[in-house]
Image (cartoon, rainbow, N blue to C red):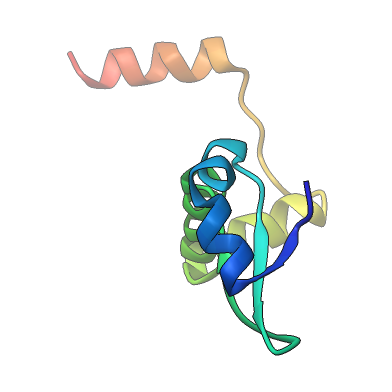
Length: 86
C-alpha cells in the first residue's frame, strides 16, 4: 500500500486506510496537507510529549542516562509500597 496519497485517493480508500493502521501522508497538488495516523500511534506521540514537557521526568531521564539513577528491584519496591499502605 502506498503511504502517500492525493485527497481523492485517500477518500476512495479511507476504510482500508483506517484498517491498515499505517501512517499515510495526504497531499494536494504535491504538497502535504494532512497525515492519517492510527489511534495507537497518536496516543504514543501524546505520551512522549507529556514526558518531554514534564521537568521532573526529564530530570529523572537525564539522571538515569548519566548512570546516577537509583534502581530498586521490583520485588523490593512492591514490598515497600505494600508496607506503606498498611
